[in-house]
Length: 365
Length: 165
Image (cartoon, rainbow over the protein chains, first blue to last red):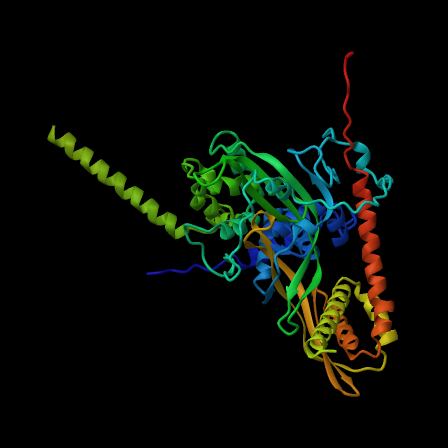
């Protein structure tokens, strides 16, 4: 028998109305505009796009506003929105080597071609709250330095790769369509393309903790940041009605090349191995974490024993998605009255059986 | 001219035309919609463009490559708007196409109209100088500004010599 209970309609309607009110807050305070969010909370917008797996700054800003700054809620909103849209095409793979660089650093080569460009970074700040910043004081224009040389900034792995000191990128099999988690369910063992997609949209906190765990000895890889680069890349689409690719605009991405310790074989001399991180927007913490976890998950390729959580692809991929995770954790707060009644009933029966047995034992003695 | 040389020069012409159209389409896709609307007032006035498809909002899956240059993988989706329009011309009809990042039906429609008008040809030169070139200049100017700002954050290492000898 299934008994449905109805109720709470008015309570829900009023709760949502209350939510609207609290979101807006004190009406004497000016309302947040989407421009303010995309401009001044740009990194929150970037995180929502990366983990929402949908590049659209305006939409992400709307989600941040609607979610009252709860970024996982905003990510959920963006994911829900994407399901309403048709997929037109897949882009040609973006070329991060041709990036319009806004930041580019290497921890392995001081004098790498293209140089070290700090860009807008929190690094080397004192991490002291600046009370001045709370006011709308004028902010000076950034310093500019003319740049005549058109020195290219090759990916560091291409520089190191030229001497065969580091494993190459590997060739993609061009006829094979990359795995797509949005179209087909996860299968194990997963290929690297499926893992990279899952990591690129995975929860930053989860990947950060896993990456950290590899540094602390759970799947040690002894990594170096070969390179981090942030900037815009062109997105090109091959339109079937045209027969040639066209640029449809640019997206900002962060790329991290993590270089790890060596591996050689009978046929290959020892060389550095690599982990890769690529994330929508500006998020080097996420890109670095992703590259650490990508490398850890390649354990099998390098005959490493899989002993740590970060090396266990089922564990990592099944728990990296924060929309899935929040759905399952948060569903616990929804009414479970009947489930709970059933368990309560079971517990009562266990107790009464125990009392009955105890009484019998006593009687027997 | 031999047949094969003729063939080759024709191929080169086609390649050059495709390259020019690619450039123009890339420029339309990265322009502001008000800029395109103003330009259409001047260049396309009086022409009728009939919608063939859209404008409609959808998604493209943006791909990256493992390690930057290896096997492709799906990075995540981006919102796009696409449109196709038919522009009536003395010699028939020309269909223009556009796909642009973001959700802007007006912009996609205008970009498709400009693609059609560019193909018609009689306005191509004006489109190149009054639309494509200014868009490319604005993009280049923005890039130059950001590059110079980034350049000012370049680390110049110097070696400190300590002690004597």
